Image (cartoon, rainbow, N blue to C red):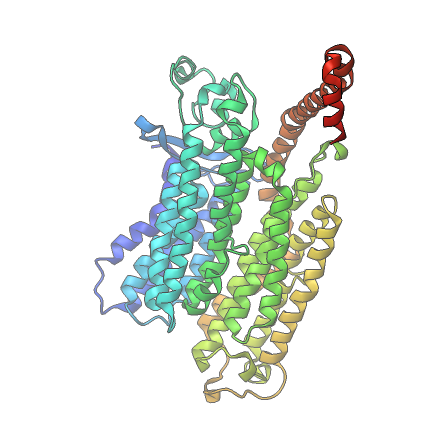
Length: 601
């Protein structure tokens, strides 16, 4: 078996195999179940680290833009469905974030005492679904992993959540299912309007449809009489951005791209989440147990951003170009709304949930900036800055938000409430906890030197060349963020003495809690001081993707727009000339009075 197939498959399915192993564990051994689950998540994390460090198995090399460690194996060949996975700078850092967050969330699961075996099995199945989403490059396979992730999360909220857990779980399920249905419609639309015969042999090889340009499959594809449809995401990207042998307006035209983009974008916006499809998130966070809130904020929200950057724009650039203002405005609205909503909260966990809505708005804004135009000489640097900023923001938010939810969970385990007005004076009672919480929360604020600063600044700077108004608003959101973060820190950790119940339970963090919080604090500082640790992996791939869209804008979109404008101008000129010449040369004199009366009207 190919080493790439074995390594990536084992990375994805090791948690599922571990879940199968746990099924044979006795119920009365909860500690053994938890330890085994933690060991599996640690093993997956070690594998993902070795993957990005350039191990022989994955052969991933930092600084290279192209797809690496990719393989394409027949799965359902009658419908051109393949077991197609691969790794690049975009997916690689998100896979690492997923494995890291899963490991610390499993370590944070020790307070779980109800149905421990079922909890751990569902947790490991969830990790398999998340890893598969980021590595799958066949749309059908991607959708399977997307749906696999849905059911475990539903039960993890609905069984182990708070008092309103059933309501929160059903709401999460319905919102996500709605997005999935819209996504499925778009997938089928793209599949039945695709035809890989339109691609050149080089493009077929790049998309891994064939192994090489000389492969016998090339001749078979080119010689096919009927359309050869595909779920291959890389091939769909090529079809969306090229004008090879077929008429693009008929094969994969603008109207198809518009509808597909809108359906996919709504599905991914639910997961981000963006206003107005965000309302499931606060309820899910408030009712979910602490480890599941860490997974929700740290990983699941990033799937929406990943889908936009991997699928929406590369496959449907026509719609992305035309809807840039819509996407950017939606991102800014989410930023402002989330910040104001966080200011109004009395529940500690709900405040952090709304902060995620605001921070993920930066991601949508950065991905929506289409600043490559004729006026800017198709300069892709601003959009590349926005995309890199959005990607860094996803990583930084994954660290800071997981840390914030963990810090809320630590104090909730002691006093069993989250009412902000009843806290106060925790710094004197819990100095280690409070010090770590300060670093994590201020990282979410975007303080220079911490991880939250880099992505927000890059996104804001990239928007300036697109819309100065949106840039000013996005910069002003930092003031609102500072307001709710600093006000929260003052109410919880400073101020008067603690006023809530169970004050005698306020003791500092134990060794397990410190072991969970310390890596989050360290990474928040490390990525803020040396962001190149992230950029060296993802920047080449992100910049190359943006440059492809810049080339498409210059070579395909703008010539098409210019031709359309020229045609419209020609038609307008012909109509104008006809309105002047026709009465003298064509219209009989007997008809002139009627024509004059019509003109007077």
